[in-house]
Image (cartoon, rainbow, N blue to C red; front, side):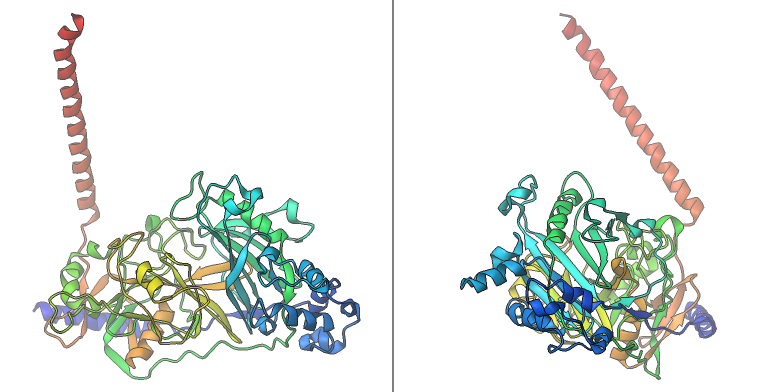
Length: 560
């Protein structure tokens, strides 16, 4: 009877899903109008012919080396330091003193070590230009720069800069803070520059030569540094030094034709074992102050699923034990459970796309049950993690976060993986500058979060896209749903009824079934809370009585 009830509940859920499910959509893209004549006019120190009028063709973005000799020479000089420089369709700004290098070359002195031209920053191990723009990262140790001597943060401070010809048009962010504040001291050099602290990053955004640029540093907005991040005040000192050192080092004008995002491929065959709740339908009680998640059916990239093998399960890892029935079935049947979005789930991270303005920045994904290798009693390998697209890694040694940047004619996007073992990633050379290919194994599912065994075995996966406000976290849920569908070769079914939580029928062959939610009702939670407060009061009262008795016993002795 119980099984019949479960099957009936699932039938109702699937029936309602057919009419309520929405089609996925591609991201909305736009292009920057790059003012290359203005950029080339700044290169007078490189070559006098730079001031020559540009042809109509060049003004439309079709400039070649023949019509911009200063730019051609600059690309030739700087490509040794920044490989692939001329593939960027936007002027590449980095903290490099081009004029000083050219003067030294003219005087016959061209030092092999060019660190001296980086204004105290170390040469980029991550520099990734491409058809959509460029991304780069530089590091600086405050102790090595006299002007930054008051910064006590001992570790290198990493500064990222991006210039993007391709922008993602998102709905207006919820947070007013993303607009930033003007910076009077930089207005003359960077008209319209704005400063903001968003998603644990100090950001400066500005438009130069028609291109939006963003400079960002991960920081902790308090009086002391935490989580291996400098304070935002210290980060601000570094950012100002970085901004004042920026110079054009190259790039190449190109026609920016309107391109469409990659088509979204979904299998025609329907799966009878893969079901998912729609985006924004968080597990009950896990949103911030009752807020829902972000309803976003956008597939931001046609990726390969980040786990190498099936089955896999996307759900809440922090709150998954809240549902007792789900908890009981996790070990044996977990991957057969229906998927659940947990982007914007209750966290303290600022996320502009979340209704509450804060929340979980990505999606948690759990592998299927771990099976011991032949001859072993314990399971030691919980599954491989793969690159979701061709791209370049950004990650420093000992860091937990690994970024995968993608730069192509129709997308500029970055993906972040969390909870892999830093020690193993270091041993596998998963470090900045490494090029990886879609489907290539880049790590293993682990449980690292600030320390070994700091969380459950799963991977956190998030997606960030460039906007006029800088890189912004977007909901990766439907991107992952469609990627998993392609991996299993079958299309999932969206479960529209949020009053049920999926679980699996032990008697079925992988069939996804729906069961009623098992959670304490509000009166029960109130009763439990009241009981807890009463116990706390009683404990405090007993402690006060105990202290009073001790004082009474000590009084005669003190009188003597």
